[in-house]
Length: 296
Image 1: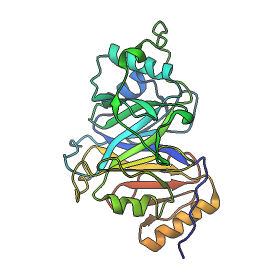
Image 2 (image 1 turned 30 degrees about the vertical axis):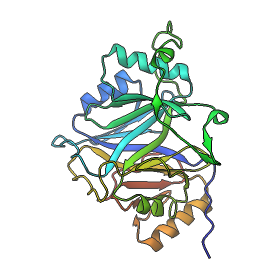
Image 3 (image 1 turned 180 degrees about the vertical axis):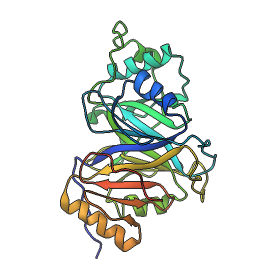
């Protein structure tokens, strides 16, 4: 009999840990340009939060000899920074334009409007705002995210006269999108072990997972190639991300399923550490916070 899996609706991505090459350069971008707040330092790692919060959303660890992430490897596709309103997204957009920061693209996904750009090390970022859930597109009872051109001009007209005043305090990490080696293996891990619901599987080369009826907390794709290997340890990119499951029974259930599947790398409380089949690191925590260095 299949085990019943359920996650609380307030399950969310608590934070992302990135390896970068130059801390000063990265802080000039994340802190000084985008407006994240520095809330701690641990050795070569700096913790950043939304303004007014002490809960870190980003951990940046400097490795001076880090090299670019090789193409056609698993790992980070993008970290998705979510702002609460369209006007907030427009303010960030204008801030980046004024700084002449490069963009990868702009998309309307039906559920959201999104900007895509690299950080100073080439780590992929998405900055987005959600549409109200009543406006999300559905097809035959299933969520139907799309990729259409963003109304750039319309977005830039939002609050056009308002000066930059920093990120809103409600800014969070809405989701993370990963390169994986195999989508079925990813589903066995993110749905079968973590307990996230598959929200869309008909998007070419991708599969999406969420809790609480969200469009996705974790996206996975094989766009770097099926069977792609993990990046080397000295590459910039993802060290780990944190899935917050604020329910003791659900958290314990994940730990037991991970143990049975041989995916439990490090025991701990209030967080334990797993690696997905493609080598991506995941802290599963009962609350927000920084767990430290992930195990090798």
